[in-house]
Image (tube, rainbow, N blue to C red):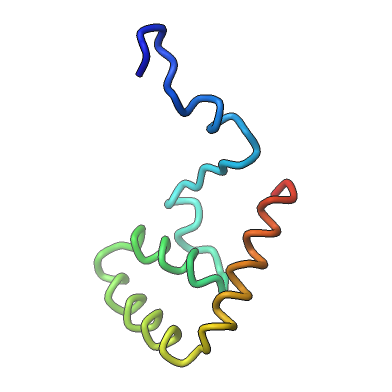
Length: 83
């Protein structure tokens, strides 16, 4: 924080380039996006996290890397267009 109470990141946080994601809001969202699934794993209750982790690992092992990248890029494009 600077002396005037403003953070070095205020401008960036207020821009359209940054999107806040609250883990509790995406915890039960159904999605095929591996990045979001990883965030869901972080936010999952302990009793559900082990099953989610095994499921995610299995999915990553079975899905070709180029498909994972395409899905990730598509999600990034969507977020840059106002979502």
